Each structure stands twice: as structure tokens, then as C-alpha cells.
Image (cartoon, rainbow, N blue to C red; front, side):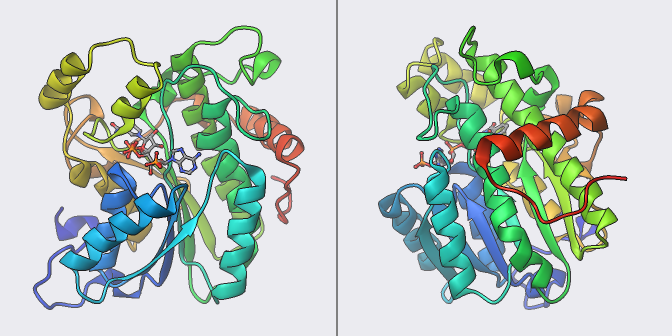
Length: 320
Ligand SMILES: NC(=O)c1ccc[n+]([C@@H]2O[C@H](COP(=O)([O-])OP(=O)(O)OC[C@H]3O[C@@H](n4cnc5c(N)ncnc54)[C@H](OP(=O)(O)O)[C@@H]3O)[C@@H](O)[C@H]2O)c1
């Protein structure tokens, strides 16, 4: 990535703009994009809390990064987004051990898996990709607001949000379930939330901004996990072939989130993704998301429903 994106990933000894990133939480930091975001920010001197559902996988990933960057400042802590008690416990631990939070990278996710439920009875993709991050953000917003300087919330979405619809009559896919529709719904919800949060932060004149991003198509464990769960009917070898043609590396796919997390000039409410073929690969750039993702009425309704479902509220004034 070049410096025109405000990201100096080089190790040429020139202090980068993001030397002052401070403290970052990355969810799903042990694998794929979360791992690469962690790696890139560690190289830039951030202190990163790797929020992982498996401590073992988290520690393994941490060791890999530490062996590459001596002095990397990393802590692994357990977070299972499929369990709101785990989300609350993670946030409590973080608030009792840290003075501030500069960037919250809401990255973890699952894709197109057969219907299953979280500990709280939510459809798993909606629960993990969206509701878990909604609750996590609400718990952590007070410490972000108290943090010196500016803080950011960055939501990992997907081009798949474009096919998404919020089915308020059957949010949990109990009456009818399509693995891809549920994924699209969760990824649209990520963006509706990112933009609504930014509008409310703006009204509150908060020093926190909220943004969205997506990685295009990137080679990670996402498809394999889906296949393992029995959600992906396509043969893995065919998927690998498609990945080889279409997808970029996880390192490249992480760049939009790194950009959203660190670019000094980016505004709240922006959306970052690759600039190449069908926005599937390439350098990160600002781009519009779907028209539906900017629907404020839809976003407000989803916000209210999400507060009811999770039992977690934001201490923010409503939108104007
Ligand atoms: N790869 C792509 O082309 C692509 C495209 C569009 C969007 N995305 C989005 O990018 C994000 C990262 O995915 P990835 O491609 O990097 O896939 P990945 O390699 O499978 O990584 C997913 C991460 O999420 C974690 N995770 C899953 N369920 C969790 C839970 N209940 N609680 C906490 N963490 C959980 C996984 O933990 P475990 O390792 O323990 O399973 C893993 O660390 C997802 O939100 C995905 O929707 C990816």
C-alpha cells in the first residue's frame, strides 16, 4: 500500500503517521484477515488485544507475529461472540486492565454455515457477525469516549452485503433459512450499524468515529470453515481454484481495515474496499456501499431491535 493511503507499512526507520495508533482490539485475530490486520498494526507499534474464541489458536498466532517483529505488543484474551456473557466478560476485563481504546476492529465472522444458534438463541451468522459485535461496541464505547485523542470503530463487512435484506419478520431464520441470505443479512446489518453509530456519535459530538470496510475476495479460512460445517456444497478443490483466480492474499485483503483504522484523513461513515475488478482485489479506496445500507429508517429500526435482543444499550443520544 502506498503512502497516499496514509499507511506507511515500511520499516525504513521513518516514523509512520500511525506510530501513535495506541491500543487496538481485533476480533478474530488468530486467522485470515484478523491475523493480517494484527500483524500490520503490530509492525506499526500498536498495542493489540487479540480477541479470539480459542486461546490456543490465539497464542499460536501471537507467537508467529512475535517471531517476525521483536517487541510486538500483543495480548490474547478470550472472546466468543456467540455468547453475550463472554462478550460482557471480555469488555469488563478490558476496561479493568486498560486506560483507553483507540481502535476497535470488529472483524471476526463466519460465512454461509448451516443454521445453528448462539448461546443466546440467535441465528449464528446474525449473532456472531453482527449482534455480538453490536454488544461488544456498546460495552466498549464509554472507554473509547474517555480515550485521549480520536478513537475509531471499524466494521468488517463484505460485498455480500449487497444481496442482504433485513427480514424483521424472521430475523433468526426460524421459518425459512438460507445460509447465504443469512450471511448477506448479517453483513448488511454490520454496515447499517456502522453508519447509524457514526450518525449518533456525531450528534453526541463524540471523539469517536465509526466506519465500514470489506476485503474483496481474500484467501483465508472462511470457506474452509464453512465447508467443515457442511455449509458449502462446492468441492473444496473447485473453491481453491476459484480463489487462485479471483482472490487476493489475506495480507492484501487486510489493507482496507488497516486503512480504515489508521488513515489520518478518513471521515466517519466512510466505506473502504479494494479498487480493482468488481472491488474484489486491489488497493484500498473509499467507495459507496449499497443504497440500502444508507437507509436511516432501516438502521434506526435495526438499532432498536438489536438493543432489545442483546439487552445492551448505548449511552448516546438518538439521531436528529
Ligand atoms: N475472506 C474473504 O474473502 C472475506 C470476504 C468478505 C468478508 N469477509 C469477512 O472477513 C472477516 C474475517 O474472515 P476471514 O476471511 O479472515 O476468515 P477466517 O480466516 O475464517 O477468520 C475468521 C475469524 O473469526 C473468528 N470467529 C468465528 N466465530 C467466532 C466467534 N463465535 N467468536 C469469536 N471469533 C469467532 C475465527 O475464529 P476461529 O479461528 O477460532 O474459528 C477466526 O479468527 C469475516 O467477518 C468475514 O465475513 C471475508
